[in-house]
Image (cartoon, rainbow, N blue to C red; front, side, top):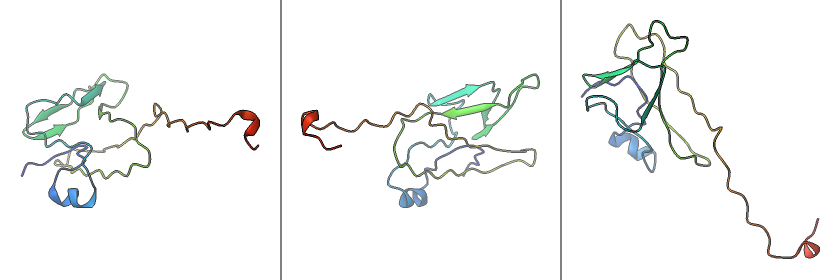
Length: 117
């Protein structure tokens, strides 16, 4: 089994038993990142089945490697990862819902004069 060092909303069968569906998983078996990944000021690479997070030495911001999913209401998420090197210093998981738009409730078919305040 290959080790992983990053966000992998796990694809193991044990995980699938805990939750009704997997939103995203990556075992980093392919060379390079898959299409779902985005990057910001990142020099990260996938090497030997591991996401190696790299912040460029001249960068003014930590490397960001991310995935985006469609917004959902009341979503429960489990994130599993493992550091595979004693050189790893930190890892951050950030959930950003700033673009989520809650569905608007259906309006009543009654005319305004018939509605109660």
